[in-house]
Length: 346
Image 1 (cartoon, helix red, strand yellow):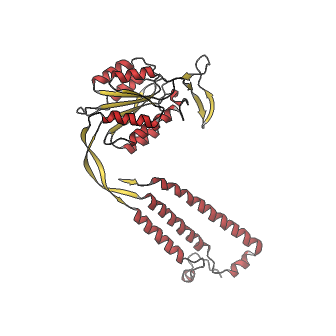
Image 2: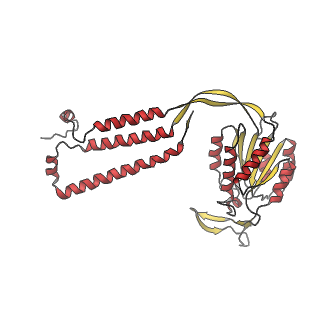
Image 3: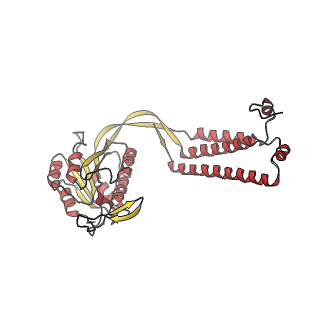
């Protein structure tokens, strides 16, 4: 198992193709300039020892050295063994609404992206909890089973979008029903389902499902994402607004936050309703609710003894720079005598 300590340094790799392009432009300019002021054959006689290959080799070594230095800054680490660790926490499942109404931009940048930001920030503030992710629109689907791997959770979260479910509508009840199958530990005393949605529900049996969830010991925290005044649903192509969604009467559809349904769901399960407008307030409220719950101790496997690997890449960078210094741009005499590529023609 490996991990990167500071992965944002990977952005520095973008410098390498820029340097390569500058070098290519320099060679092109040099070649054109020489052609203007000297005959090709005469120039070759005047600089018999000049080696274009050596120049390219020097540049290659410099680029390789820079590449190795960037990887050293990233500092890849390798986990050397797996060990069992004791962790305490709750089983926490996120149910994310990915219906078309979540594209409304009454809350920036839009309801769906705001929901993903909220989940990501909550994950950053969790301790030994286990998490899972569900997506739903007209139907619900499992996105990530219960796990302690928060990095995987963020990866699956980032991939969620409104095209994941072909059936239109919003079925909160189906999301609650699917969440029941996520809690595979009968001894877990605290099972939490966090629903992030604008509250629209087109099924109508959500109250019954919430009551059934409460009987199984599942507490539901609902987070309302959107505004009561609502907003239209944009239809975009390549990020450019084309039109707003319209109904069968060709009227522009306006979708608004339905807090009544979300408050009802939370109250029926002993949970809480949170407005999702201010991220910091949402995170603090969720932390407060989770801290008040009893934590269950469980065993989890994880890689330990991660060892730094940056020193190998620093050594490689020094190696390439060392050889670059001693490479001159003129031909090597003994290599020229070998005539490997039949350059010396009579």
